[in-house]
Image (cartoon, helix red, strand yellow):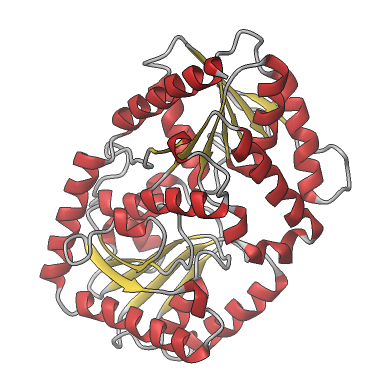
Length: 395
């Protein structure tokens, strides 16, 4: 079997969970199938054919992506048996390549555009284009891989025309040899962490999806002396920046909080996670949440919102604490304030009980080792490829 992987992100240029997924999946697939080709967007890199997002120059970002998609589709080797695209950025390339070469197209749903309406703030009309590209590719695909059971339900709810038999669950994974407890202190020391005080850590982007503003507001209710360390890049939009900056400035008046904007090496992130008392994930939308797996693999307790696929990763009362969140009530200020208060309660319960936090951390790492190995996920992915080939041949 010869497979072509289409993706926006590929190591070493990764900024989100989809990039981590592809970066971990490809080496495992190369141990199982005859050949794996990778077509990626952006800068040149080893192990992939790269396509810069420059056409048409000056256009809306979504249109530039579609231009790059056509170039990616043209570069797919003609002897490919299966095309596998990741995120809407590459879905259109997979659709075009599938039609051109008459081979099955498999898409992995790392997120769903209809569930991220805040992206209209960034893309304007380009958001309608991204929604169209995703929907068209999903409905035409030989198989859709959802990264959690929750995501599968969302896919079928969003695209009711899909045959449920073509939608498969293959969860994200974690490399427990890379993410493991790191007793070193050079990184956390340089960041000014007090190793004798409780530490709450967040790692992620400043987007609506990741809910960081809720964490910063909740942190005002953390017990005195609890440190908050945010490894978070620049906000996506001016509106999000204004909301975050206001909340961050207010928090700094009363709590020890540090915001690191530059992207740290993965080894540094591993050490930070290892020294956290609690890893915080306040997402309002999360198909699975690889970052929670990374924290759990570092033997750290997690407090997270109970949305999307997170409950399939974090076991409430075993590896962490889940805080209910209802996206339908996102515009209700009293509900949001209550969510933030309950999130703070979940954090405080663990920072006050280090033994319980440690037990959650140990259970979390064990769960990662047993349930989320990439070798297992690669085998499940190949099973989907085989089903996609059979479906395509039967048409």
